Length: 543
Image (tube, rainbow, N blue to C red):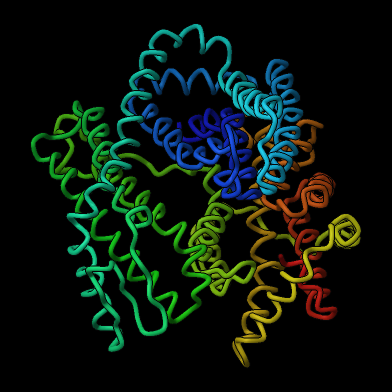
């Protein structure tokens, strides 16, 4: 059942692609120049404020679907063809529109940066292309049968999701008005959290200033995180309502004040940690990665954690609906075995990015630890390691290394020099230890996690729903191209080189039907890159 559900969720690849396109635009461009523009272009700058609202609306809509409707939807997706004719047409249309949208975004920001008003034609073209990107993928997301069968009911749920999601987003913004009343409580809580760790605290609650003699921050309403109280209230309220048939009331109502209290407390923890990072790590890290990401990580962890607790806790579930799994036999989830290492790697990267300063991730070594634990937990089900590898695997790895150097555009010299300076600033032996962990992770951990996911799982899943029964020697053009494009999406600075590498590693696996050969080829490529970086000071390869 778990694999069937995973197969259905994989069929939603158009929605994942839409999310990736949004991230590509938001990460590649800074909308601040738009606020200095004149005319209608200035209004585009507010899209960054509206974007979280769309995420909230989508999440609440999914919750409101309920178990029955979600089950019907997943069944429709499980039986749908992953890349049918309609989806291929939509994908081609989307690729054209997104390419034009990316180029037009650069043009629009360039015009706004010169304090000029973009032409109405340019603005209209931008909005039309953005709408075309979204609707082409939404059209591809669900099979036609699903629209016909679930359309009326799904339309009602979507309407409710739009209303409740808009209320949640509005409540999140409106709760910022409470900051004037809660400011002192938050600041004194931050002060209490920091008191045991520093005797040089600087604290001016009337001016919302707190920190140390070397790093002082002003906690403004727009960056206080207090809007999470309004957002968590609506999100948890929707969950309690949607799960009213399964939860034990009034006991389950305690989840609401618990969520509010946790959001408020961890907002203070976030501010205290931000100051600690600014004092002991780097002010740049504190005000960039940590400041922008820690709040969302805490909020998601609290919301998902409490929902998971409610769904698993016997004290919160109605007794007659509790599942007794005492006599059930444990089953192997093949999807988890192949995807868990990569998901662990991505999750760890997101957490360590909080403390990263540009391309320099001080805590890179944690990726080795967490992925190793994930691999150990799945050791009984991983593909067997056969040694020695085939003769072709090392040759493919060396060929990809040569192509990587040829195809990869040389990175910014300033960023590469900055990365090298930060490594050297660690001194000895810490600088050498960081370099060793970076080389070890890239050479051993990353190839295993990525090859299990992209060649061992995704390539075969694109051939048949039950991927574990697909012979690893079997290839199809769609499976090779799509899995290689997905692999390239994890390497945004080297899209062409990564796509070519994905095809080469697929061939390495297919030659003898062994994922281990693809891992060896990938490991040799990354090992050669690491050696080239260390020998030639080519740090631009690690940007």
